[in-house]
Amino acid sequence: MLLKTFGWSFAVTALGLVAAVFYGGWEAFGIVAILSVLEISLSFDNAVVNAGILKKMNAFWQKIFLTVGVLIAVFGMRLVFPVVIVAISAKMGPVEAVDLALNNKDRYQELVTDAHPAIAAFGGMFLLMIFLDFIFEDRDIQWLRWIERPLAKLGKVDMLSVCIALIVLLITSFTFATQAHQHGGAHVDKAQTVLIAGIAGLITYMVVGGLSGYFEDRLEEDEEREHEEEEEAARTGRPRSAVKLAGQAAFFMFLYLEVLDASFSFDGVIGAFAITNDIVLMALGLGIGAMYVRSLTVYLVRQGTLDDYVYLEHGAHYAIGALAAILMVTIQYEINEVITGLVGVVLIAWSFWSSVRRNRALEAEEGKAEGSDEKAEVSSGV
Image: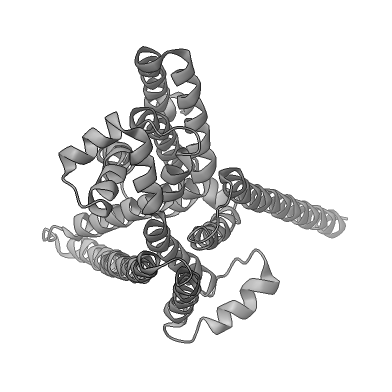
């Protein structure tokens, strides 16, 4: 099972590391290995959240996620995306941007870093909405009840998560603009870009998330109707109508997953510049890491890990909230990538340990109940 799920990841790792050696020797090998570990540590929470969505999709769309989705993640977000950002921010053509990335790496790094506030605003708002919608929902299973119970009550207020997200964006952009006035007009323009990029992230979440939610609801309704038709066909002997809605629902869920992955990848792409400004090594290292994240997602689904360890999804969403806050803060201040990665790992490890303790407590209660039943049977037999 482990080899079947992670087989492609192992193969991509081997090919990527060999390619790194041929490209830049053993120093490049070490850089690619470090970038792979960086991407995995920063995106582990991404895998847990993805698994919660992917388990609703059939085997065909899980394969699409691991094939087409990987191409989008590796080549789209880790290779093409930084070049597109440079092309837009520097107002140059894509061919010129690629040439700059390959032949003038310092200037390329400077332009990507210069675009970071807008990237962070877009990704931060998208991830913040995911966290807020999760924490304001009333759930049967609650992890940190002292936080989640009162927030679930507040969540009954319509559009509360949108209002909070907009308040956060306005405060961030206003603070950034206030500081920018001290540095000239160009920085003021960048503050406006942050506001626009944040609104774009919010709109993207609402459109893609809304469409996937809509088709998911339609799918559930259609499944109920299909079940009724099966019962009717069994009684009357008439053939039932074919169902085609699952494809639409799965497609928009897949689209939502890709946008989610893109938002998670922002910090990894920007953070990679702390290690190297070589776009080829970045694509190799982050691509290997992205492959493991996807394989881990499928592994969690097929093993039923989220059902066994019920607080994992909570921990991942808290990690998303932390990452969203970090992205918004990095618009103005620099935060080490190690801190970003450790926050997510600690929250998920804490939620995993809480799940283990919960399972042990339930097993102990079941053991006591069985012991009481056996005593009662013995007493009645006597």
